[in-house]
Each structure stands twice: as structure tokens, then as C-alpha cells.
Length: 239
Image (cartoon, rainbow, N blue to C red; front, side, top):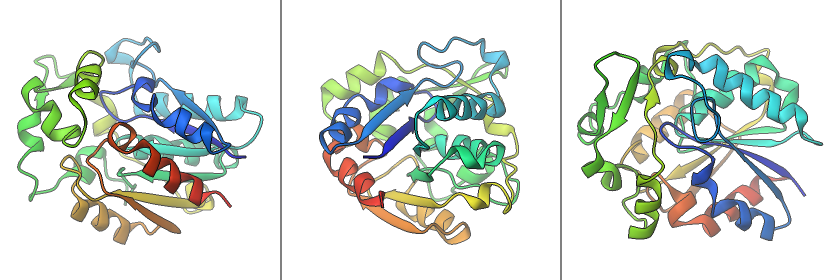
């Protein structure tokens, strides 16, 4: 049995893993989904949310578990688990990136997600006038994140999506070979992703190689549309 620590991406919270947790448990594993600071039930004012605060939360939860977890970072969560591994590499068994950002050369999330071929995402994001947060255009939410999800799943997400603090997106992701590089890492590609395209995922993988690479034929949110297939890939990484 392995323990999976599930770290959500931007705008989301632990609720997005509601289908994956039982799928992993059915395969004999433990799954723990967390709310990052400023998300879900982990209340923190947007102005106080930082990438380091996210990472510290992941480290604290990991250290409280009875065994070192396989930590799964979705989308923005890839940056979070990378910084967490830099902070405390011995806290983690492996890092698993689910259609997620891989750190490269001190760049920030905005730089790492920059994809000139993606015409959708610039239309999806809306910056708040106070410069503290980013929201999602409601009419493009399904197309961007949940293209192959059911209407019920999209409605479930629409009721729970929250504003995303901007600070974590502009902070450089600083990692080193001696610390972050000590933790084995794997990647799960999502072949129909419209938020982080399949080609862009492959580009990040080429720059920051991972040991095991799996794939799910899904949109950006396989935890909704393909939880069983996703659970199979994750379980296959356990060794």
C-alpha cells in the first residue's frame, strides 16, 4: 500500500479529487487530499497567499503522515510540490506531476505556462483590478478545464472555484539538484488538455525529464472525467 498526497492546482481545492480518492482506495492505497492556503476550507486572505506558503502546507501534511507519500501535483500544483521538495526532500517518496508545471531555470509560473500556440487561455483568465488575484471567465470554464467532463461535474466545479492569488504565479520557482533533484519524479500527460496542451507538456518534459511517464486520454481534469484510468496510472508508478 502507498500513500498518495493530492495537491490541487489553481482555482481548485481538495474537492476536485472527490472521485480519485475512492478509486485509489479501491486499489488498496491511501489518498489524502488537501486544501492549499487560501483555497477550500484553508482560509487565508489572498494578499497573504504565496508559493512558499503553499509548499510549507504540503511539507507539514507530508511530515504528519505515517509514511512518506507519493505527492501528486496537478497543473499549478507542480510548482508547489517542486518547492516543497526543495524545502524538505526527505519528506517525499516521489513527485508525480499530473499535466503539471515542471520547474526550469528559476522561471515563474506565468513564464513556464507561456504557450504562444494556446489561444484559449489568454481569453480565460481575468486579472482583478487590485492586482492580487486572477479569476476564470465563467463562460469558458468548461472549455478550458473540463472539456470531456459531465455537466454535473462542471456544475459541481463552478460552484466551488475560487479566485486565485497572483503572488504564487509571479514568484520564481527556485530548486536545486541537491535537494529537489534528490526526489524521483514521474509525469502523467493528459492528451486532450486545452489548458496546458499536450505539446506544451511534452516540451516541459524535454527540459526537465522524469523517470516514469504515463498518459491519460483526457482533458485538463482527469480526476473528474477519467478517475479510474488515472488511478491505474498512479498505482502503476508505485514500486
